[in-house]
Image (cartoon, rainbow, N blue to C red; front, side, top):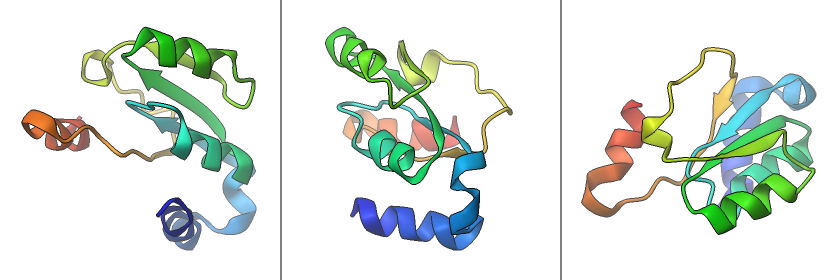
Length: 100
């Protein structure tokens, strides 16, 4: 699934632009999507509400850093090029993430 997601992104941004992208994985969990984007060359920022997972992501120098907070409490910034996520689906939170 991750490889297919990256393939879709490459169709839109091209393979030569990854190293110029500023990307976000909100509700990053263990960082699977963030890791893939980082391996492709993007500068990746993470947001994760779980403190233990956020600390682990912040220690990983593959990313620009990880904010420990609920993504829905974050003020979106237009300075990003792409947001890739697998949002939480309970209580329709997936739609709130997409709209946010």
